[in-house]
Length: 415
Image (tube, rainbow, N blue to C red):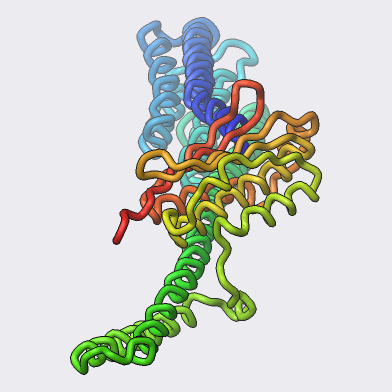
């Protein structure tokens, strides 16, 4: 993934908490406003339309609205507490004219919200219990508690309440299940992405280990050959010196056997053909030629001034792979752009820089390139550099291009 896109995504992720906080603040403000409105209208109806004393009318309105707020924090406690004012209102009311009984309109709305909040904040069984208990309270009031209250109007009142609250209860339960499924899906995607990243990192480390194994095996083979042929190349050596060279050859052969066993564990079934020598600084010319054939202009600086013996095979392989991945990124993300490869020895480190100019179609290619391997090339470069004790810095340039800078430690003379 390009660093500019990564920075944009990071800024968006950092802005998510503040956006959620704003949404939460507005939701709470709307909820508190609704509670205050229900309490004010409910108290007025209790006192004027249902002929309750002010203390009871206001107290029941406050209590019923308070249970709605309590249900948000403690669904089970708030739901059970809401049944108390719901049952007391018909017992203390003396309705005027055709006032709805046993529930007032405000009481019905408040209890419907209690059932809905219970469905959103708790298990679906508790929401179902809240709906059944609320309907049972209304039924018990009109048939058992208040004589003569079982009128067609009161029965219709309970039926309407049961229908509306039941439908909204089912909707709230479905909404809660949908939210849970969504959260689980997000968690699974995050876990899958992390596992995929770890798997690719393990594969990259295994590939690096195979390549370093081949380089070391080549050096060990040279040691075996030199130690074995030393008595024939120098016939005037003493018997003690010949025995020492034979011990060196035997130890090297044992190490080679162990390394071959490790190589068999590292190589997969499809990697049987990867038995050739690993590339180094001497192969950078062919790499640059291949990149030029892909349509980019590549300029190489400082390659001829490097001494392969000073750099070493492992550092040479690491530098080759870093340049290879950097040029691949130029071809992939900035086709047609000019690139510069610079190699130089700075003190005890080898500096490898690959910088490219901006491309007209680079932004489009970066947007289209969202495959599963996006971003793993940079990770592989950093992993290679860290294994040999170096570092890699990938940064966009001021003119819109991109630059990869690697500092790789050189082996000390005689090490």
